[in-house]
Image 1 (cartoon, rainbow, N blue to C red):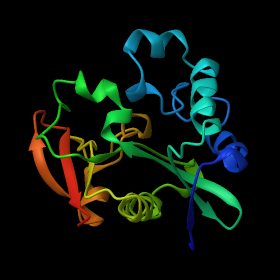
Image 2: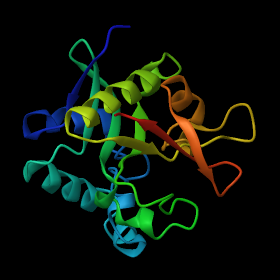
Image 3: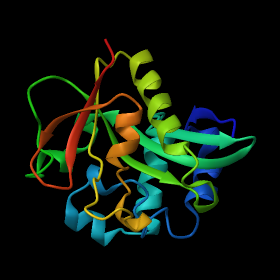
Length: 187
């Protein structure tokens, strides 16, 4: 499958809505979990989170990449400087590894018909190139490493560790058996 990767912009907002669908990708998240306090996230789950993400895009930010197969949006990768995700700072498991400035991949979503076809690995590689072009020196992610061979898709919304490793990332911390922190030097 030939893919191309473009940042979400005002002009591509409808593509993100089409990809995420009525459920907002996963339970009305709209990739806002790491950007908000837990209570604010829960209060505006669904349409409120959609509006919040749309405001970010309308303000001119590019909060992630959309993967396209032809003209069809098939995948999403949320990425930004780690400071854009204040909830990461409050996480015991995902707190900063060190003082180095990093960009973070906080979320991955691939449309059901395109899963298990390499879209995630390609998205992660495209995200690394995108972050590099914007001056990032380190790209960090917080994937899941399930204890069982196959985890339900809803539980791997931060991506699978195996996909990140295939894209060249290395473990730098592990404060939970199933949640490594992985990094790729973009130098």
